[in-house]
Amino acid sequence: MLDQAKKVRDRALFDLASDSKLRGCDLVKVKIGDLVAGGRVRNHAMVIKQKTKRPVQFELLEPGRSTILSWLERRGGGLDDFAFRAGLIAPITLASDNMRGWSTSGLPALGFDAKITAHTHYGGRRQH
Image (cartoon, rainbow, N blue to C red; front, side):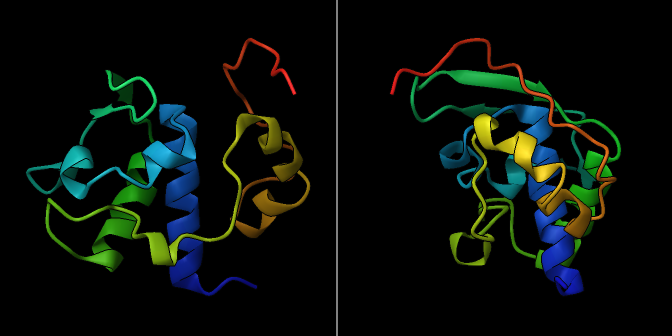
């Protein structure tokens, strides 16, 4: 079973990925200051996507804001620090194609109901 700190971190990372629809390479570059203002998690956040170099704004929904706040309180750090330090991120794949499999494997370990199915906005098919 995951230890409590790792469970909070993984849940916060999952919630951020779900709300933002960011790629993993963009998620790990999110800074605490991108998510927090005045001691509270923002309702909306904006980051520059690595692939397109363009800003993208997204809404942070409840309970995602709560889990992100819980993680950041445990994690500590300043506004210029990364929210999810690379050495602490669990070896999970955040690609939308793989999220459907989490509903029966990884999601219950993070405290989610196994009946949840991953929701993505990916409309195209990848060329392999």
